[in-house]
Image 1 (cartoon, protein in one colour):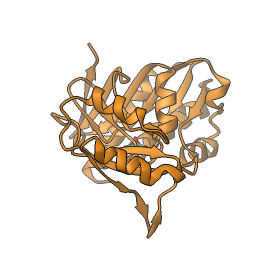
Image 2 (image 1 turned 180 degrees about the horizontal axis):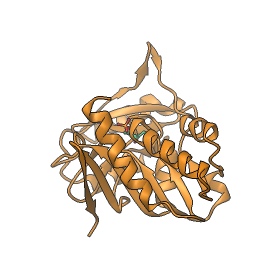
Image 3 (image 1 turned 60 degrees about the vertical axis):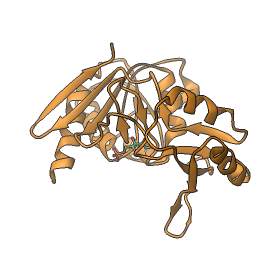
Length: 226
Ligand code: 5RP
């Protein structure tokens, strides 16, 4: 396991200490969340009783394989705790997420969550968000329209491709990776992206994280929202 993988694992193992019997738990998506889901699976095997809400088909498949009892977001009114990864995070614990394309369910789950724990290796912290382009999920028929509106906002956007074809989200939407440079006012960008007809979700996660746990070397650092 390389250093980044080990940092992800350490952050995940610290985060799962917050999982308690009886909780409804949101399960994030990505290579860092993977370690948390694996650990939760072990806890369930040892007798922990929880319900979990997966944020993607990949997470659902992993959780099913570990016999973690699953429900959907529509089955619950609130989620006690969610553990998820991030592509960037800043000092205000604001995030850019969606590198894996699961931003829609991740954001819905985060909104329902009482305690949102973000886990990351030490490479994800930034002074200002925006070096990682903002994933913007759009209805397929609206993709060129949305790209033009992003240009009107002063950004530029590229439709995400994978292996030579358009990348499709679990909900069969497309993603525009939008570049606004380093972002001075993420709240304004988030608001304006949400105004574009055909946009389903954007990857700015503002005021949603309660705690960021970072693996660094052989230890972890914990940051809490003030
Ligand atoms: C998926 C996400 C992931 O949490 C984000 O891309 C980080 O992934 P990883 O843990 O693999 O670095 O937002 O939509």
